[in-house]
Length: 322
Image: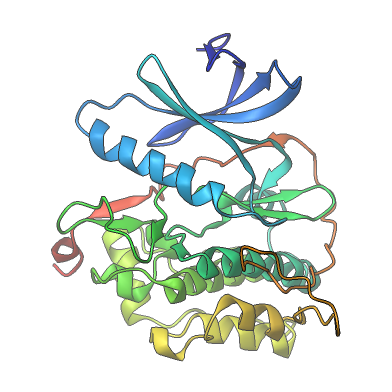
């Protein structure tokens, strides 16, 4: 598909991230003369209708989320039966690649990445959007340390009817929450649990729940505690991770804003200033200073494909209980 022109302006140049539902390409917007990431839905006759609905939902969800820590959606289109999204091209690496190459990260780098991801989730949750697939492959880190949450492909609005088939559960086994693993609906608290799993992996260099098969891994979230963190982990970060990984959603932090505050990111205090937009949407956050990660070879990154051993899950709950 290299060289293909979509929407009479986006020229595909190089595939940079294959995925189950779509492939991501480096592309050129030849109207604005800038490089972009173009996510093109894969042809799948057996799932075409469901995938197309999820793809349109991703466009709607992403377009409504404007935040420095969320990848910006530029455009959505359909061209000769191909649906595509056009997003900013992030120069950096997915967090999954950083952990794979560097192993455990320094606590202050973890604090920065975790805090920025919490800010991104806070914006999504306040807009009524649950990500449902928070994992290192969907967290991009620029060379200067700025974090971008991406891939709202299976996100769901909290007040919308989803496109999940009866009995189907979506998520990635290594990062799925206990409630999702037993077939319950994902909520903002489920995203926070997944963020806790990501944090644990950043601190140790290993996935805390990995039992060899998707079903065994998913059920380990329900039945097993995470491995203990080392003594080198600061108490405040340890406390955040433990709170996020609570099996009971009601015992996790109340919202992503609380997580950011626990990590030292406080709401902006602009006394006497009315900074709320007319739409009524305001983040109210001070952005956590980014921590550059070195050494980090910059590449143009977009949502990354997961390794073959941890596919995004679409299983029926009864399969997990066998």
